[in-house]
Amino acid sequence: MSLKQDRALTFRESTALRFHLSMCGACRTCARQFYLLHQLGKHHPSLPHTSKNKDD
Image (cartoon, rainbow, N blue to C red; front, side, top):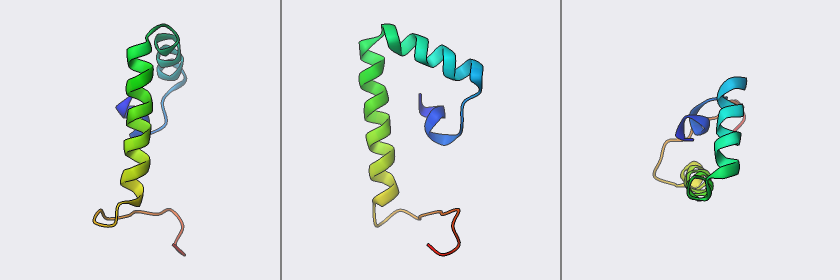
């Protein structure tokens, strides 16, 4: 799940993760928490920001 925050998963990785998440409530909760932390980190003022868009 943390790897998904860093890069696009392969088809095989994505399929395996979705299958596991369909059965595991604890990991679904963890995935939501990873997502929220990642989103908050992108907007935290003390962290360096990287952007693909040169105008940002």
